[in-house]
Length: 522
Image 1 (spheres, rainbow, N blue to C red):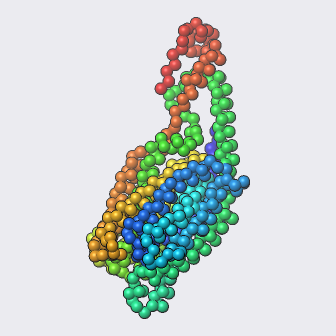
Image 2 (cartoon, one colour; image 1 turned 60 degrees about the horizontal axis):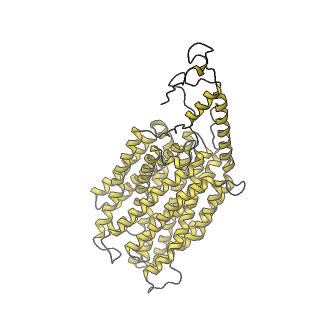
Image 3 (cartoon, helix red, strand yellow; image 1 turned 45 degrees about the vertical axis):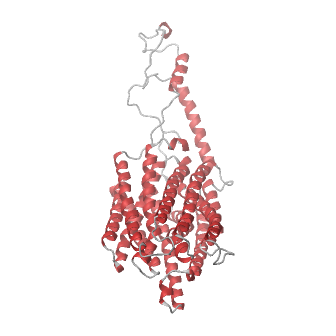
């Protein structure tokens, strides 16, 4: 059987694909970096209420992600538009319609409105946003193995994608710094310009509206420049070809020996895996664990770095824009060297180098309690390490899927499910353990956020290293399913072949003279 041709993309098509997740990245940057800050420090919600909102979003995303992945694999899409791009469009519209309400005041609420009522107001918008975010993410990730087939081309496309993720984060933090700077120019009171409070509501509202405008434009460029090939018709054609090939093998089997000539005969190609089959693959759980740990490091550090800067290091609020900006600039620069490095030393070792940078950051924070301006150096380590492990974990997922693109969306959906639920549960646990229950921040929270930053980076990095060790010992492979129809096929063959030369004695001897033919199959 001839080898499949290697699919590749031109530079304009790679760029048009990469910007397709830009809206999601812009919104995710605000979600993870500023959600707790906005609801706890700006709107004045209790720690547990702010954690509940993030948990609701993560659970909604976690539930929607595998369901959307399953539906994205089985639905043909809207006409000839393609099933992945159809789901991408549905997700984009949902995000645009809901996200602006999340970073704004409750419409119709007053200072006397109970916090539980305000909580109920925000929950529906968060659920719609997370549905749209999941639909956009899964459909966009599922396009990678369909657009390119070469292993290093997948790494390159993932790196392009992450480069625009970093660019989105840089955009958000640059805009946040600009808005905070403009606000400080209008206020003479240093306590207002340095501390977060209700006066910052317009800053976050304007930031969310600008983000939606930029993201909608890039999503339009994605839909105009990216061509999805095949869609559901291609999957159906593959299944029909597989059925024809199976029938042809049965017909040709009558002219083949019943027993293989050698125990090391080449095995037939892998059949198409449906979503249930992935649950029986050990490598599926290996990659899922590493991906979950990676997302915990990236998302939790992004969520709590702002709290660490303002409550532990007591830095002005402009630092919640500049420090994340430095992190993602370093991540952006490191993304360009990932392809040659991973090609030279492999994905697993490249992932390990990223973990070393994460551990170096955690050790630095643990030892230096008052680092001040040195936080910029630590931010470089965290940004470069986070970028490295995220790109490599996504590349490992693409390697796991390989040619099984018909169920690729389910795999990405399952990976995202574990990461979303784990992140939501971790944030809720951290918020429940917060020592300040009645105040925005009490003296006890100074060391609380210090310890949280060390644990969510250094502690989870150790767990990720253990998961990586299992991949080094047992590499990512797809276990071929056993063919259960072989005995029935042999029975059909034996009934159709009354004379088998060379198996039961002299040539021409009738096999019916013997009562049975004992064929052992292991």
